[in-house]
Amino acid sequence: MSVPPAGPGRAGLSSLPDQLATRLAAEIATGERAGGERLHEQDLADRFRVSRSTVREAIWILERDGLALVTPRRGAAVVQLTDRDRAELREVCAVLVARMGELAARRRTIDAVRDIRAALAALGADARASSPGAFALAHHDFVWRLSALAENLALSSQIRNCLMQLGPAICARFADPMARERVCNEWGRFLDAVEGGAPNAAGEAVPGLIAGPDGAAGAARP
Amino acid sequence: MTGAGVLLSPSHGAPRGAADSQGRPLSLAEQIAEHIARDILAGELKPGDGVLEQRVAEALGVSRGPIREALRILEKEGVVVVVPRKGAKVSHLEPAEVNGIFEMRSALYARAARRFALARSDAQLAAIRAHQARMNALPADDPSNDHVDLSSAMAQIMIQNCGNARLATLLNLLQRQVARYTTLGLSSPTRRAESRAGWRALIDAIEARDAGAAERIAGDMVANTHRFAVGMLARAQDGDGDGDARGRP
Image (cartoon, rainbow over the protein chains, first blue to last red):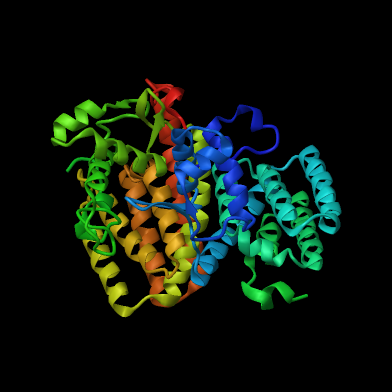
């Protein structure tokens, strides 16, 4: 099972390889490290001043989470997704978020919903202020926290994982500030259904960011 | 074969065997992983048990390099946990983790069934019908594992041909993590009768290309297996338990 990435409040607990993997995962998810780019052990060891075995373990974590591909004798590289891969991932992610909504609608507590509303308001403020990459990471963290309402760690980890893999595509959509505000509104409606204790409505309120088609047409649609 | 299940046998179109589902031959490490996974499924290695490299090396006559790689493969699949400098242990799943995986699996499986109902070919349907006929011919008190094997084989045809490779990979990964509980969930004659009835309804829906019904029935089938397995698990933990919590990921 996937170990949850270091989220807020967990950073102090993670090992060196975990921390390095989290750092590299963020670079991959924001597109700073493009698909196909090689992950050289020695270069990374030098840059982050860690041992090669730490780098190797971090790469194993990235491989486990579907962000890197390790080929025997050729080393590791950032996973390169085709359009079809992205469409498949989106579908898996949408199914998981729908299930998360159903479970959250049954298990949420009023206090927890209030905290998530506050987090969503903060994300909304970010939507106007931050860069697409920074907003994408803030958005992933928000979804990670939101998914905790479903009380299913494996599900939360898997959703986070899908979003990280879709990261560069999501970032591209977030280049448009309107798209950032739109996703906040969509999560607001999702949260309404969760708060109302309506599993079916929550299952159907998956944001278009996840459920919608890829490409410029998807990003530009009102 | 004991409780290993046909998930591991190539004759039923399973994800693993001497070759993978695309017919690619398995590497040495993958074959070793296969061997260890079979011991775990058969209950010869229990949750929390150490997987000793030395012992595997002697049993299979292979060096420790590929064994270490095999353990990494199994770790990626959540089957074992590798602790630095201490070696590998069979994962122990807490009841909450088993529940979590089943909750995910039922949603994904339902989607695979929906897709398959729309995408299936007549030949694929015929292959499922042939397995179903064999399942229906099993005696009610059949002591073998054939019901579970045939059920897995039908599920594999559905999953591998659902048209979304990522969905299929994730489903198989989750199945591997909870395979023991799926077997438990199909262990009584009553449950097997329910499972036969579920398959009958599901295959009829698939034949009629009724995506909505296929989705609903498939989700319910996983949920029913889950409910029963959780009951068994709770009873097992009241007894001598399922190992300790140290092996958990």
